[in-house]
Length: 285
Image (cartoon, rainbow, N blue to C red):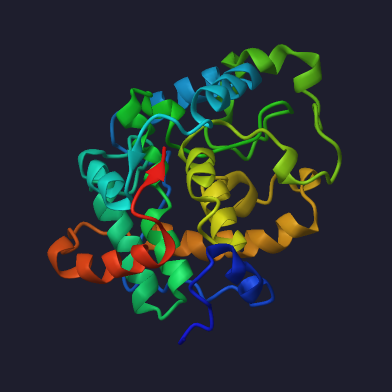
């Protein structure tokens, strides 16, 4: 096949991409400012981060993992989840007011136009589907926005760092040191990340995508690390290697955003075939 990846079983093709260099970044034809939080005029962005930084504690994250990671809420196909996102606008995003369905299509179509492997394109299409947590009644501050480790000192590289002053863990000695409850270089697999759509979707799809795709899904909102270089002391060599994929993906996630709605009728047949190659008819959510 054109990208050299076998189609089944899903986990078999993780090895096929491990030694490859991440694909080229997306070249935005009309560059403009992105992630301009200080200059953002959309109401609610700052308030979302105030609530997120206050309430995302070790105990909160552990409670949400217990609540959701049994994946027994419902059975649902990929396209049912995608359809739900047509009703959701991400309140943390200063760059677009399009629905999340439109954002997913823009991201995936940009990856397709750039000629990237099918696993990369399908990752672009589904990467935000964990936001269906809003369907289960979760507030957006517990679903969207930048992610960060809990259980150690909050990095100043996390957006709106000043709001962590209201987080109870900031006053817990065991959680407020550089390493906190973690070991130097222990790897992100052993780190509790703030709860949201990244971690949730990782668990939903972890048996169906290659490791590189799963890493992108799990850490694509961890901007303090892949954009600012923070928390390197928690990572191992595998994390540093995998972050190259996240950085590449981020260029598509960010710079494919535009004001024009994508044509779902025109694009859906291609993406339906693509998703059927990787996912069963229904997944446990």
